[in-house]
Image (cartoon, rainbow, N blue to C red):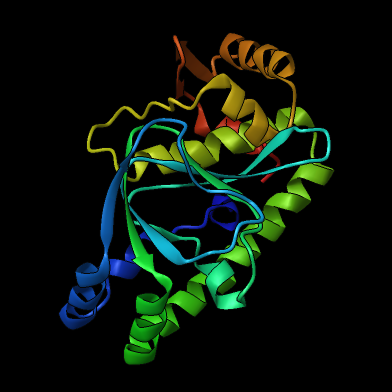
Length: 226
């Protein structure tokens, strides 16, 4: 059931033909980003798409009171920012790195040309776009209908999956800051701290500094009401 809340297009690049990969790699402009550096901001006009080579990127919106709501976190190997290009509209959210990251930029002109040239890439991207919208709808429903405790459990499960996907060791540690985790859950930092304390007391998680390790995924899944 957790798959309903996880969007992942990491498979996309790997499933392309060598010719399609070469077309993309030729036009990629690679840039290193420092932690907390913005890649693009809500309301700006897109001039290309992005491919995350290393690191993690958060996608968020800011409400009228200035509160940040994290919508999604991208992993290495994922494309992002393409929905604004395909819809010919401004960015509907902000993308910011949450750890030192390497991001490849593909200019709009080159991106649209490759879409025209590659039927496979075009089909995969449209499929990913449809899946992404479905995941976002599911997440928005959760935010409006579930308790903070349920949302916290679900957020930890989503993050566990994200941090596990590019982890070669058995132990998976979530290193997202408490502020970002609170913004993902959609609650105050103080409320999140109490819930994490309760989870630790119930032996659902272990904490070491900012690192969180899930100890009982089955019980957290039940708490998340999945």
